[in-house]
Length: 452
Ligand code: ARG
Image (cartoon, rainbow, N blue to C red; front, side):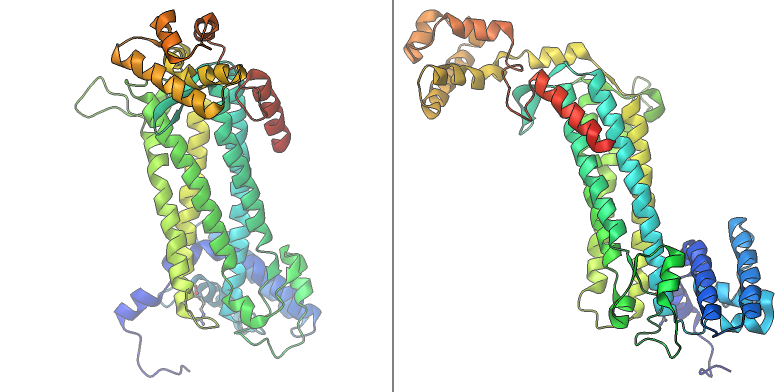
């Protein structure tokens, strides 16, 4: 019997059915159902023989799902109903007992939590791998000078290793964020029923142990309404994707003829359909472009949940496509970033030529005056004046004469030329976390320790 006298409208079914995407929860649903049946039997709610029949059917469903041979049927609305229907086909009437003391509301929340946990672990591993690759590439380019930029204007020289390690730290923070996401899935929703709990003396701790949840959700209303762990995953994924986007963006710039700092391996580039000379850094461009897509999934789910009354509303079915696409996109990007970074080649010459721009020593000249007693703010003004005269005369700083220097400050002597000549501006950055080589070595060691 059904409560409904009329069949569902085709357009309603197209809108309402979620099987086309939630089939991905199948393996978690089977695992969950197995734990649930175990608990029902342990509590005497079904017999051991019934549990065994359910398990056999669930094993068969798992095989069919794994081999892509699961027979979906016309009326399957979502993966949960499809699996229950199939279990009943395989096991007979006892299949109808699987849903005792369970609702699709606590069931779907549990499946989604399991999915999030698995993919938080995956992202944890992948971010660790990319960070390790960045550390290895940094190590190979330890003392390669390059210009550091602000406003995309040459600012101060740094070592390439230092610049690459900046990204390694971002990925290390991402890894920690994904550990936090996994922790946000700690409380088992199952056992909450539709919203109020169930009419049976269930053992939720047993189910939690079986499924690897450290605890049980304290409040059945919260349990079926909570999607915080999806928001947390999407937030961590969006931040991580933004990091990859900035990295991709820099590699695109650096690969240009104008910069000429690096070249991605052929395996990570494409040609042009019309211009035979082209080698385009498409992978880096796509890393740059994918992040807003993931951020939009986060914003969309906040939109779905905001103002939504407790408890379950069909709106919540909209969590899945955002989550799934974010996970697919992020995992693909992390794999690509790792491969592209592992095979990229840098041009020591071009990096060094750009870093040899004397203007990059302006702060160091100011600091020379500071060491001679001038307040930094005054020194900043003196050097700004020097830079201006050099630019106006189309000269390098070191082409300014002693007389010109004296006009700007009596404190400027031959050491000014020495400072520009020996190019030791990098090694002058001795502060902790700075680009001086011994500090970068220290930093590398700390990054390695964080990844161990
Ligand atoms: N397909 C649904 C979802 O993904 C399953 C939960 C259905 N629950 C309900 N009360 N209709 O959210």
